[in-house]
Image 1 (cartoon, rainbow, N blue to C red):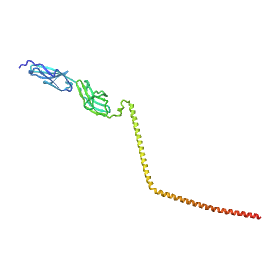
Image 2: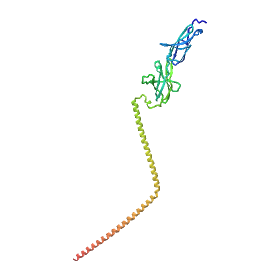
Image 3: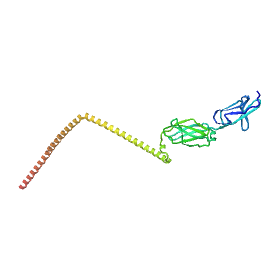
Image 4: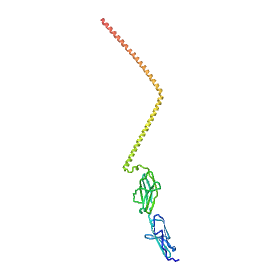
Length: 318
């Protein structure tokens, strides 16, 4: 059979192919309309400054698409008569790469989330959303405040607010653009139980500090009063206990010494009798003594009377 010419080259899946980064097993296929052309095929990629053969066959497969895989690919079919070619433009669109959630620090009603993003995400109109879930099934977008303190746009710190105290949350970052989405790893943490500062939200710092100091003073005062009251009650209890013990001892002593008290009273009575006898003896002795004193005085008086009588007799004689 005589081959006069080679037929045109056809390319599948078409002359224009759009893929996204990360897409796997991207293939292109070329053939001639006339199966009897007995052509040999090759694929050449045209770069901006050069070209290179990437395959010697009808099929060329890109294992995992990258930005560098974009460009024009030419399929050439050739035989002994001549050659024919066709081309396809592959446009590789950027799909966000998965961010990495590094750390989550939960507080009472807020959390600090640190995550990183590939540098290519920042130049390809990628939007990032921080999501959280309480039931492990439904993720919702979380409200947050960016807390970046450096110019490194690949490291991000978000402050999440309006969380419930004493709850467990699962966090993740979703990156998206019109070519697709990418999800980070999940990270869970539990919020602390409600604390004092959370109930004072919105108060000036001075009021919070003043309230804290006032509460501390009141606490110290309460402790001192409670200690003093406890000490007083303990001492009072000891006094009552000692008094009760002494009363019991007195009752026992009074019962044991009752017969001694009877003897003591008898002795007192005998003493009174002795005192009466003694006083009676004293009185009698005194009477006798007075009588002895009075007798001489009487005799002396009689003698004086006699003398006077004699003297009067002598005077009459005279």
